[in-house]
Amino acid sequence: MEITAEERINLQKKLNNKEKLNNDEIEKLINLLDQTKLGLKLFYSQKEETIKGKNIKNYYYFFEEINNLEIKNANKKSNLLIEGDNYFALKHLIKINQKVDIIYIDPPYNTKNKDFIYNDIIISKDDDFKHSKWLSFMKRRLKLAQKLLSDNGVIFVSIDDNEQAYLKVLMDEIFGEENFVSNIFVESNPSGRSDSKDIANSGDYLLIYAKNKLINEFNKIIFDPKESDLKGYSIQKVGSNSRREDRPNLYYPIYINYETQKILLDNFEKSIKIFPKLSNNEDGRWIYSKETLQSMIEKNLIEIVKNTKNKYIIKWLDKEKKEGLDLKLKSSWHTNGIYSLSNSVAKIQLLSIINSKEAESMTPKNIDLLKLIIKFSSSNKNSIILDFFAGSGTTGHAVMQLNKEDNGNRQFILIEKENNIAKDICYERLYRIINGKGTKGKQDFKWLKKNKPYLKENLKYIKIKLEDKINGNYEEIESSKDLYKSSFNISNININEIS
Image (cartoon, rainbow, N blue to C red; front, side, top):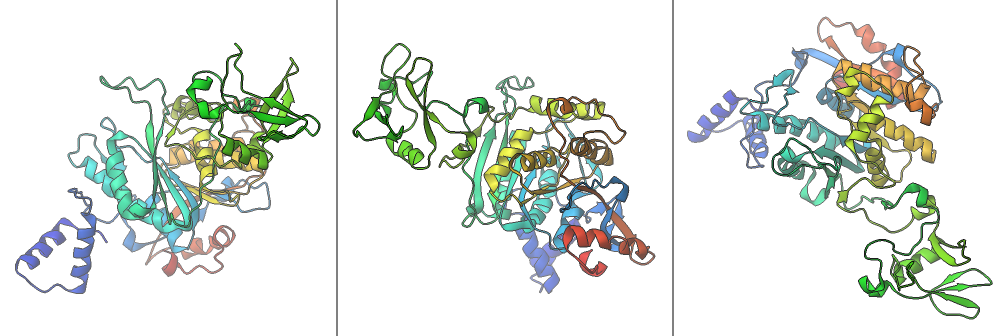
């Protein structure tokens, strides 16, 4: 419940005069106190959120599928792209009891040199209340997002320095400090931005909260060397800090039974003793402690091979088996041989699919970042992923790529307000990578040279439809029954309950 300036003044007068408050006024007072928990003088709109300037109280709103934009390839639940204001799309998803497992958003950053749109009004970069309006804008949407998360769900929010500290406090309030997981620094621009005279900013942040941290189980992710090196990557440290004196506790013998080819940490008969040696024959060191290596041996994650000089080399097994290792992600993520987190690479990824002025002007996130987020969040290959600032559709792209890699059945729900982005960029991108051609038949985009289309994926294009409560065309509401049944498992639509 939002509180207008006039209502605040009236409440203050009643409190000053020690007048009795009615139940509605008490609720507004509680809400006002809740709104100011941050210790910030936040701006609150004097009107409810609108759709295209229309007072939503006078309208029913519901989802309507644009049938001629549907992509149907497989007999499974469709991914969803919703065009419309994310505030009302989220409210409607809650009304129809939709739940999601993972939320990722990359909201407008409220930077000093950019405007953003709130409640159909452009908030100027020079607006004295811009900071407060942005927080109010985010609070409304994050409160809805929290309700949409499943019991073991998790949310990730990309943000920069300008609002990160305040957003952290706001999310503590909404999701609970006890459900804070981490504030990851993502090095998305290793060379640093050129627009600062002091320190060149080389990345942004990723705030992570669980719906219920006590029951949430995150996956262990390999965040290591080049993917091409994963099969047969030596467990001996190379490069800097690779000498015995650098880590004396990591210098110990490993034994190989030359009959069974088994790897042992204790000396047995018919075994060969191996120490880590550098190329100059000085003593080196292993990467892992004895305890960790023993665990890897027990999980069959170690193999032995002979090199060209007929010497034994002890190596990791392939990537898939390595995924079982008990390794934790660090709170700083950077591009390496497995994951590319660079924003410049993300732009190249987008332009390889859609090479247009509109795409050139966008600042997409990297596909690998989204894949890393999804893999870290859940081992459930049937999870539902929501992105309500969809932009160019990177989240949807990452979901489909992961499904192809591990034969998963994940589903995404994307929400994008701007028609020129939702249809011309996001939908066009998804259409091309699913079908291997553009909506106008174009097949000469660069992405196809190195990738195969995701032919097993489906997509529905949905818009938020408004109908006047008094003079509405209810036949259109009836026509959406199939959409609600197939995508949301709702057999009978009661417009008063879902709008």
